[in-house]
Length: 109
Image 1: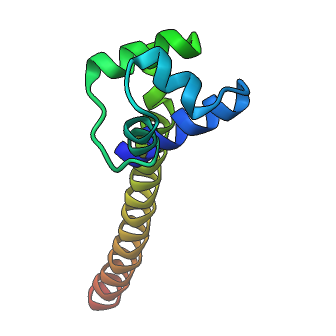
Image 2 (image 1 turned 180 degrees about the horizontal axis):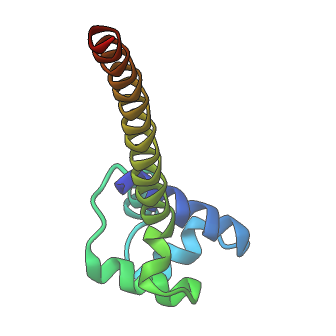
Image 3 (image 1 turned 180 degrees about the vertical axis):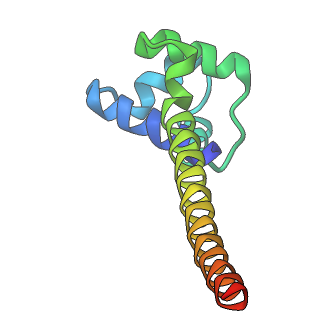
């Protein structure tokens, strides 16, 4: 997740045509320290995220939108796969039931 947040920060900075120096100055840190945040080398504190959200005019949730979407997509795929497996199991059971019914019919004749 940290690397995804760092990527979003970098891409937004570039999208807004801001330099690392611009952001570092706004944050009150060195360019090297900011670069470490943007590359995911340093951990980003919650207070730093709030500062960045303000600078970029974004909500704090914006930093995590892709991660949440990815989690939902992965969970959706998992449920879809589980559903397919259950359908296959039901189909196998139907075949077994049909065979048992055939055997019972033959024994009854």
